[in-house]
Amino acid sequence: MNLALNLVAVRTIIRKEMIRVLRIWVQTIVPPAITMTLYFIIFGNLIGRRIGSMEGFDYMQYIAPGLIMMSVITNSYGNVVSSFFGAKFGRHVEEMLVSPMSNATIIIGHVAGGVLRGLLVGMLVTVVALFFTRLEVAHPFIMISVVLMSSIVFSLAGFINAIFARKFDDISIVPTFVLTPLTYLGGVFYSISMLPEFWQTVSKANPILYMVNAFRYGILGASDISIAHAYAILFGFIVLLFSACVLLMNRGVGIRE
Image (cartoon, rainbow, N blue to C red; front, side):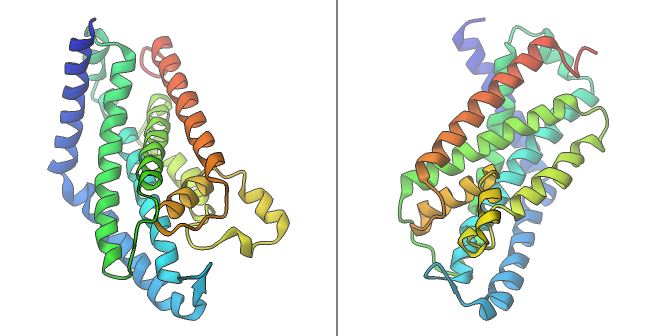
């Protein structure tokens, strides 16, 4: 299959994903905005008054990048896992498998759809954040590249979850028991410098910590970790997860069984 046909296939999958997101916008776009508004009101406004400043920033301002990144992560992941598992459950994934498009094209199309939803929700949450605090982007390139790479990572992770899922309950296990704890412990609401040395070391094993802090550095110019380490981890996860997706698709895991 030549490049031109692959591009048509990718565009078609992306178009299908975006139509799906926009058609059920009440379920895909509105809930994250409402949830993040509540976070800003409760954590930023009510609790933030008692906490005061953090790392030289107003608490509301400090948590805003973390909340934006949290919405991007969860929506990128959720879009791909629900979409591809839905294709498996509805048996129309077989139509893609017997078509001339490559497995890599199927992966890239679904991942791009997840990235677009993650970025769309992230922009909406950013608009919500501006009603509560002031955000001035310190490093635009870092902000854009980190949020883009992070959404790719979790879109790929969602694709793997969808491959192994056998029933609808399986697509909620990882978000509930893995993704949510890692996100809350990823420095969204606090600086790890506040933790004892042992727990700082433990926190550095959480990849979401690097994504949140790198994105915060892009907006506020403040970070608890090395930005170079964050980029290395993001790039490493993209290569690893994409390779795993291609391998699983080529072997037909969870699809041809």
